[in-house]
Image 1: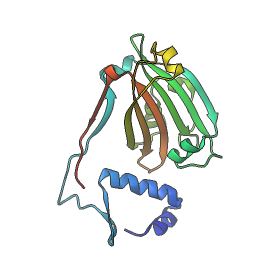
Image 2 (image 1 turned 135 degrees about the horizontal axis):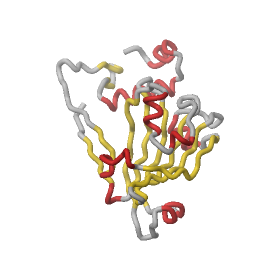
Image 3 (image 1 turned 180 degrees about the horizontal axis):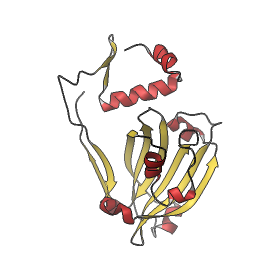
Image 4 (image 1 turned 135 degrees about the vertical axis):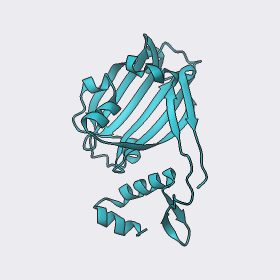
Length: 208
């Protein structure tokens, strides 16, 4: 493949955006980086390997029955960590969203989400009450491509203790996610805190 500066100039994007796009392609197995050889496109004809990623709760089959309590929805300048995750500057504007996901009156997930306004325009409160991803895919006609996800265990914060009826002794499963469109634009940085009894993590790992 051409070098990074050539590709960035060809597609009129920054080197940071290009690097993030190439990192996604490496993670997906479409390209390979080799010292001395540069970046190579994978030969899928000779080797087809399964790649599956799933992150969901046991409530997944009932997603149409899920409701959302919108705790916060505002437009802000991102703090440094959020800007770095989204690949934008702190002068940019993002939606800052906090919502509680509820099934049959049981609070299951507290979501903290950041999305750049220039990537996801026109988002309204009523879209948050349903599915943000449905808005992105059905109304904006964007294709969601992939996500980097980190899973860990955390203690609930004060908001979660109040809204999810938890104590200092409880644990939540944290899923930190950076999601991208098929255009390689990063459209979401989110942290979701799940009740552990309703959280599943499944993946298939393959060898590059």
